[in-house]
Length: 295
Image (tube, rainbow, N blue to C red; front, side):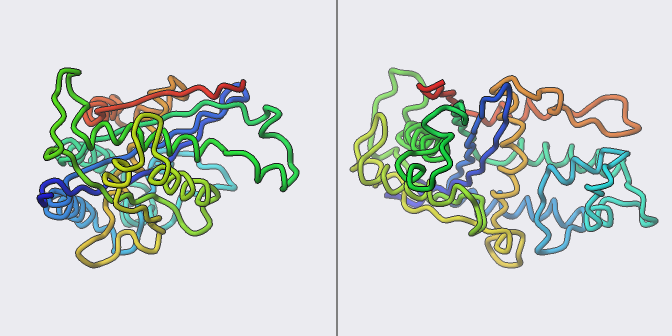
């Protein structure tokens, strides 16, 4: 296996509740390991430095986008660290700077060498197999994060085996890739146990389409990346965690056709909103929506 066949993948999740149905989405970005280290980490760090974002300050794009709200809620003021970064020096937000930042983020993502894959799982959290509060009963069932990750590993395997092109593509094991999984989440992530179990079951039992022998070969390991590990000084800053954080919610809203009014980035004092979809959609190679059998 050549170094050019080694990859790294960063994953994040999104949840949308609509008409009492939960839409749980996992998105992943995958890059060749050499591309990730030599290009993605380097260019993302340059972007952070251009906007004087200090080491250790993790970029959560929901918080940055919230700065665009000129009248923040009393119980949710603007993040003071972000106001300092994107402010004009007098405590006011510099909307021109924010506008430039979002455009630079999209420009950077557009030229970085990675692909995105998305799995959405729609379920009814109030169905009788999920609504029971008894702890013993909850231990008997699998929840959406487990199901979604196993389905997503199945989808990712198609790409890693180089089968995502035309159906006539001939399988050549020399072209398959191996990836390490980096999932966004601290120790307190509620879904952590479900996600870990899904991964271990996939490499032990296989997925919907692939036997365990090949899944075990394609996926080297899974690690959960906490906030304390992102944006630190060093050769690996886990830029992928910030990039997939920007992409996941936007891609999920677009895929499900829900909350699409929140997709455009509307900067005050700027007439035309920024549309992130052309860039994000250009990165997507595979996506799937799955309905829970129990509605």
